[in-house]
Length: 359
Ligand SMILES: *Cc1c(COP(=O)(O)O)cnc(C)c1O
Image (tube, rainbow, N blue to C red):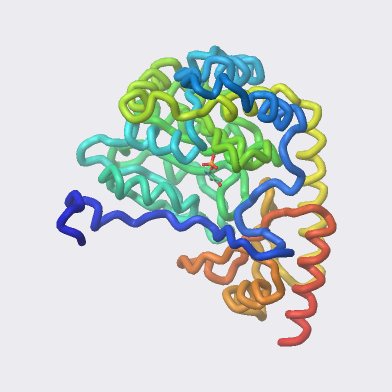
């Protein structure tokens, strides 16, 4: 604790992102980046947008981007709040919707670990709801809660398990908690789950969070957005405009619009990742891994006879990065990003050598 710090800084528990090392020939399967790159049209507008106009501030409201999202989902632009990556949007969501004196935020015990970091930052008590033995989320665990929650948040598909909930299950949770925000983080939804945006008209307490970092392959641009009822989005905008008026630069706004409008490239690239995921799953099972049924661009897998941390370290020696979390219940799993088919094959080849050598 430094004497210069504000009091609460000592108690923060910062999120630790997957590493981004600068090693040649490294196969990076640790942060769920997309193997095929962004839409060529997005790259084109970034190139052509690098001109004199950069002396001017960007549109503080990201109007064109909000309209592109609205067109894509058949909603109103006033229902969209973009931000500098969905992590920033999530920070505003926690600040604007979950700070209710004496009430706890409900979330699964295993989910995106950044949620707990925001709870520390904003001093929000947490109530962890254990996932079932098979890591599925049971909607009944969020229905008829004894105490009114500050809100509910989960990722769908969940991270790092990859398991998805059906829309009717999400709707049951939202209907049973109609007085509080139910936030569905859909970072991976495009790889095989259904978006809860379809429920917002019936359930105005649902807030959906999207990112362009995963299925749109624009992690380096930092663009995400929230979709919700106008009432909720208005609250998020108040917080955003009390924090940073210009969270998205000109190039990011233009690239995001071009990417969202290029549906053809998106569908093709997404399908390639889904096909590679099914290939990777079969290959891993052939080596003896148990693989959870993933609807995301990663798989979560454990080997019954090999320690996950040791496997991750051995892979790293071989120039392949995967993610290992030393958290309770999941410390024997590896989270492996789906790469190209060739990258998946290289990983499995290395893994089969490692598992044969040490069995
Ligand atoms: C990757 C990820 C995010 C963060 O996305 P950014 O838009 O890159 O900040 C948010 N939630 C989940 C569950 C993620 O996996």
